[in-house]
Image (cartoon, rainbow, N blue to C red):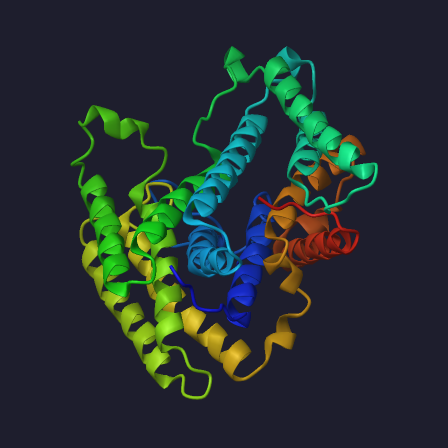
Length: 393
């Protein structure tokens, strides 16, 4: 396939940066008192779309949008389809491994393991950075040092696996795969679909409709009694979010024009309206629930994401206002680093017995504290990036 030369789209980086920033924010606000309920995740059986419930699917949507550009770019640089497949495979493995470690960290039994949760977390983060940091290509003595560092990271993760004991004596297991694991499964599904369909909007539309149909059938209980379905690692709803992003990216490549963007805006707005209508109809049968992965959640979120991304594109690529987001832009460039840093941050706070005053754990001051914390994480990730330390899979 002869891929077109890819063009840097500011909106993609900014949309991903906004999503990552708010992911840090919503992960920090649980435990705050006297804050608006709509900011939080809805309970499993609660019919509500909390602000926190929109962030993970927005990340999947942004990841899906990046897939066509990333694969096109690799092919443009001379990579073969087989080479891309290997890259997708190892990237998926990395996300699954990190996801499984983070989710088991949450259920660690310190008494049985002989290691506290903060210490386990710090070793885990160190292992991640040793294995998946971006190492420069060198020909001096460091060509032996860097593989040794990667190997030491693998040894650390193997050791953590060996000593692990979960609550009630549970063994180390995938559990629900963790956020990074769910991202990994959605990534491999959407990347595989794109490698088959490439830039054909019709074929990608069909793929998206199939995933939406699977989400609807799953919610209707059709798959409940099919034995092998319980081995599917995540709901089709999550894959549909990623595929919606792939589809949006292809629409942008075909219809977006900085000089005359009206057609693209009309398409994205129309898709948003269609998704809203689907959400209203779906809401007659299923509640809005992130934890249940209902189609209603899917449709309402997509009704937001399509026109929202069009607005970000208008603001950053058409009106050239991307500098407005300069302070959080690193979150769209070193996203994985930003996500992992809090595991170390919270662990250090715990080991040092850092406690915030009561007034910083409630209401508006608490929300400001979480907003500032999220900015500090992005800033730290930027500093690490300048020091040539960053995670990339």
